[in-house]
Image (cartoon, rainbow, N blue to C red; front, side, top):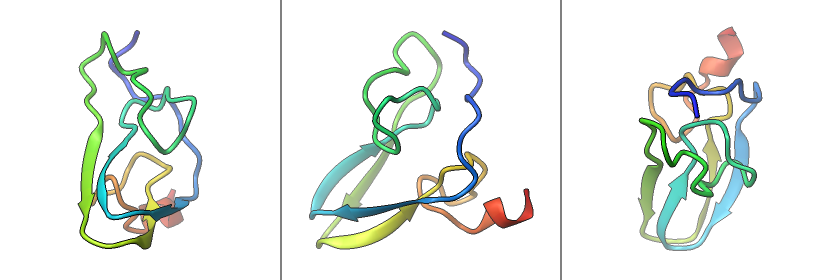
Length: 79
């Protein structure tokens, strides 16, 4: 597997999260985006970990360019 991130979608993923720890894809290879499914194994990528204290809706970066990964910071708007 390559150590470069695969092209992703331009817009963010809207995700409803329960309180707890969640892992998001950083390699672009997950078959369950935006969540990590272990496809990064064998590469230099590690999943993004996000801990939320209460249930809420978040926007997870889909373009792979956010400065606030795993969450969207609007960077996709300038691509």
